[in-house]
Image 1: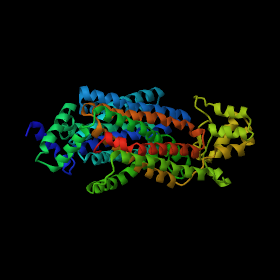
Image 2: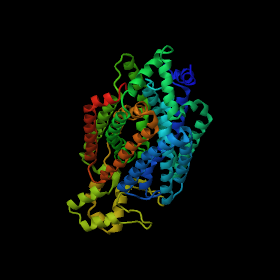
Image 3: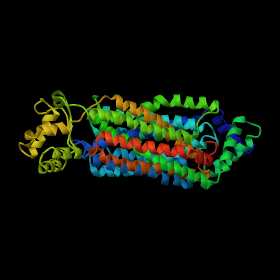
Image 4: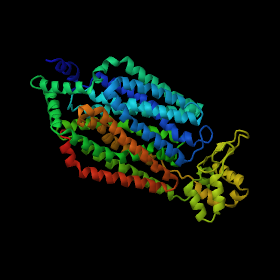
Length: 548
């Protein structure tokens, strides 16, 4: 055998004989700790910005706008990072560089200053650009071209992402409760130290995944040669690779771009988890923890559902009935729409509740744009409402607009002060006597209804199943369909589509304007429409992506 064919025989053949290489688990652990850091920050970020004590007292719209801009840049940066890795640094070195920028970014967030927030976000964007596309590309490079194990490898790798994502919000909730936001951000930085250390220590197990595009192409040819008599499995892989190679590069690239455009809507809906779904969990879910902890639900379902789903695809594959990757993605988009329909029904129940005196006395309250509009229509003077919405504390934070008033213990008197009492006191502070005069209208409209956690948990279960058919499948699709010389670039392109979707999460600025039920229904309809589009174009997509 040639040197390349020998590499196939000794290193990568095992990766397509039903057994995953050890390097997959190294990358699994590397990504797990990086995602621990990433989701630690994300679980806290919008609530930190809105916090009137340790944070900056921002409104939901202000926090959502920065969140969406950050995510847009975070997921656009892999386009550049993938290109640099393709042409200059190689994949493993790029991942290491990204890790160091991540450490700096999370460390900066432990500083209590707005300048530190923006500098931290800049470091996190650069870090993600180097880290994210290249660790994903290395996973694909562990396997020969056309390998049927790639889909399942990316599912397993995706589970590593979600082990970190599951642990992160729980740790952050505990650290934040005991020490505050800033020490919690410092813990996130420590996660990146572990991530980089793992990749450095076990570099020998992933060295063959740090291959140039030319080497991958050469290995693909060697795989085809080896298939003539050495391995039936490799022959199957070589056949799939040859089938893909028969399609012109431009057609494969265009097919990927079409898929990228469609999944933009998925990311717009899915990444509401760090903003509006966190607000929903914090304000409207009947449990005794903050919205931070809700960020673990999605990861919990990924961990619960991944292996059964991988087994199910393997079961169908043995019988020649496993759906194509584009079909899986269309099903995933359908499930995404259904998850927001669940939240729509939950919100409808909450909005239709009749508030009792007991609920009001024990409840939480928030005045926002929707509440302000309702107060004016119910006869509260517009001048008073405008005054309440523009009132500031001595340090420039909002006094009423967007502030959550919930039962707490007064530190001076040790007496319990209800959210209702705090809200009316704040109104009276701005306009003496007006809080008492308009108390009924203010508390009725500002009351934050609470519904069972069942709605949020069920919605996350459904959207997670959709996610598992979209996100890891998208990574696998790029790895299998993209021309080898442009694989890093097009892996970055997948993340650019993600970036655009994340920028569109700014639809969350309507959270304080629309009814929650309306907001969820809009997202459901958009996701279901794109599912219909994807099902409609499956036939031409399959022609451009044979064998996937």
